Length: 372
Image 1 (cartoon, rainbow, N blue to C red):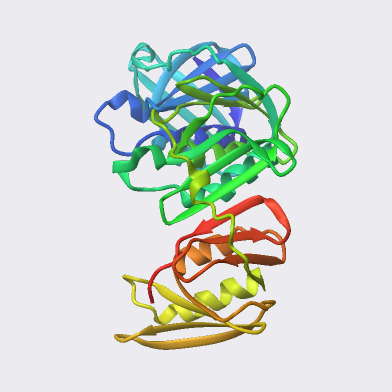
Image 2 (cartoon, rainbow, N blue to C red):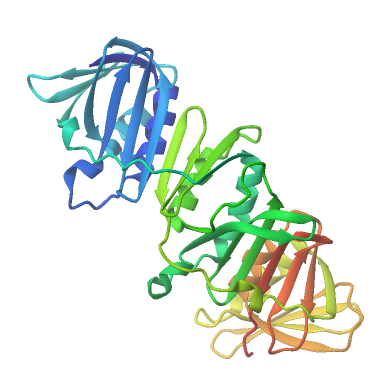
């Protein structure tokens, strides 16, 4: 195999592949990226046995072939090469090395046989549809902060993507929860998605998927089966196993009868929470919200470190209410708001609180209170 490729093109392809590779591996071949050159293109394939990414790039192929080399090592070399450099990759079959050349730089890297590289079994996808990158990015970005990291409830370690009935009819919905907070985001149902089985997309896949969704106008082909999900652009294909479990009935924890309404500038609220939380104890991170007559007082009282208080002008006309929250949860929810105002709906100091972005009902967040 011998190819020549522009450094920027190579870096983009290799960086996507190497991020999938697990740093600590008991199987040496899984630390490698499979490079396959044919025609006028080269593909880079990496896997951790749960996710597989194939990134294709245009290249001058002088000699077709395939080999595997350390993904992290290749990425680090390419990253440190000068911008605009023309990089040559050539396999020396006799010595089992891949020679990387750019200008006066020359590297010789150990390879492993391409036959040993595991390729994810192909799947029959029951449903396929196309969605804009910005639609999928919004769905996953706004939900992912609520993904659970608790391994015992493994079925919460991802984003539940399914079809639901939203405010404006059928919707593609993403939900994530860890039992303390919940995010539910809707988008109009794309053509062809009807009948899609609900799947739980794992946390790592959600993180890797973000890199495919940078171009707002890109069309992403989504294919779903009972065991796998595939996201594809013309240059990148990412296939992932889905979490084998049943997502709980989240609709039961979304409060319907919360009537006490607080409207506040989302950015000002987030900054105020951040400021007063500076003195809160690391363990509880508790912040108390006291609401009365268009006035919100945020306060923290930590016996070990001190106290803090800040007042905000808000829209609130219901009876007086005091309620406590984990500051981290409040900050994460407030940071999701794209619109100017956040609307909080309360019932009592012991019940879950609902948050929306202004009048937009397509994004709903729930956060559990805590005693303060």
